[in-house]
Image (cartoon, rainbow, N blue to C red):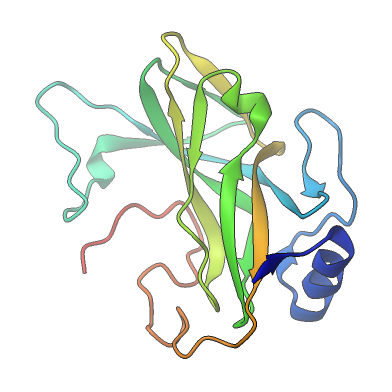
Length: 184
């Protein structure tokens, strides 16, 4: 496996409809998005799930936590100090069977104490990426829709995997919106 340059990403995106919408060049309006040297800078949609937790509340990945989140649709969202929001990518991704992808937060946000968490994108996973955005700063931080939030790096395998995410019928396959944790 190795990281591939931008021309490979453009070719893969076109031939596999891997990223929709797709920007073939880096867009430098606000926080950059689109093709980068060895990956793709994804952007945020204008949909957020903001927790409204009280000291007696508990988030449990094995239970339905929807009642603990407010749905917000806006051009930006303010993340409280030492808190987080859930968001989704503006781009719908379809990972080919011979590709795995990892996602890292953009340095512009990291310099404000923002940590972006996305689990690895497995071969043949598809959907909008649910993104956990944590604010580790001691003050609120604003994040913006329709601008870059993270960079996805694509790793091509020397051999096609035996069992893909689609083969496993993964529980987050083809997610259309911000998807909260699901119990098995």
